[in-house]
Image 1 (cartoon, rainbow, N blue to C red):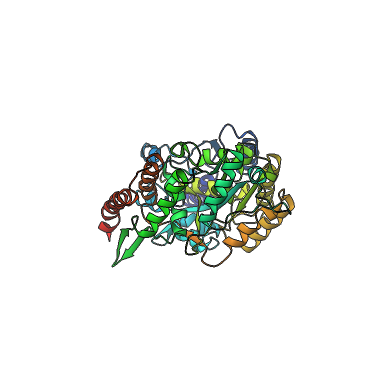
Image 2: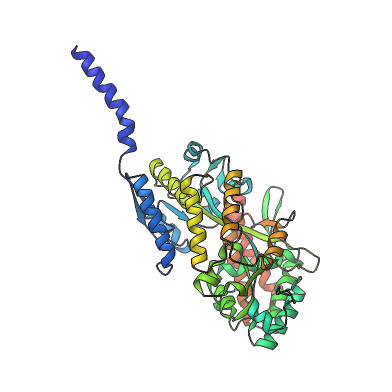
Length: 459
């Protein structure tokens, strides 16, 4: 009888063990908490936090505002202070995976059934050796933002209220000159402060026919000094010294200041994607009816790509499986997961309502997930809350749906490549006599050394 009692108690402990495990206290450090200036976004996150902690009382959500930066990431990761979940860029996953800084979440995604619902091209970016290390927040495709108030003053509007916008880079220079002459504002905002300069220049160079990295005989080669890249850089140089249509100091312009320029009328045209429409509107107060997004101009030989990238959620390498599951559950509450539940629908609607409240365009997003019911729900909510004239966006959306328009970023050491291109941009916009070919030769040599050291050496 005594042996039976001991056996029964052991069984009770084993079966209750799973419940005890499930109810143990979990801390979820939420790295995508909004910046302090975004008051209504914080209110929305507070609401989600309250709802989440009610549903999962064993999880404590700790707000942690974190903005990814290549310069600060490694020290933060090595010190063990990364948030459980954080946002980065599509250029970074392979580097973070190789460095051992992020968690393999394949098992957790399989438990959720999400591993088969991810857009395949996005899944490839977030995977290595058939293991998955992140989930997409959203993806983007670069287009061109227009300040319609400046287009109106320059006489560049059609009678139906849509803009006459440049279809080629040659036309862009001419449009920019008209705008500069008639309004005094810059026709185009070029970035040349940080890596964003190289990022935007890549878009221009591609449309001039350039390939910035090429693979040959199993090795990767820099191709930053090809005739096509030289032509694109000389075009940028002309925008500064021949047409004089850039903002006063491109070397002080970064991603954020570019949106400030387009919102405040410092510039009429700026490369940007559909996922950042809150920047000129919510952050800098641009009226909804003064913003349009149109296709990026085509190059001299008709190339007209859209640089595709995005924002993934990734997870600290030190996070436990329970913490990963808690983070994925929070994404459901936000409506950022590929599931249609009362909570996820409420999350999508809350996001749309917040956009309307803050004067942010409610426009279609890029399909980072392929779950049909989720895509349908998202489309219906977008239509329900639409607050803009879609004629100001239709050309852009119709363009990125065409075959072979979307082009993912160059595959290796992308941020390092952008840094090299930015150095050249800084030289050509500050020195009228800069030797473009010579500068690009140096940039090419620098990138090749890095490719040989970090990529080709491993092959």
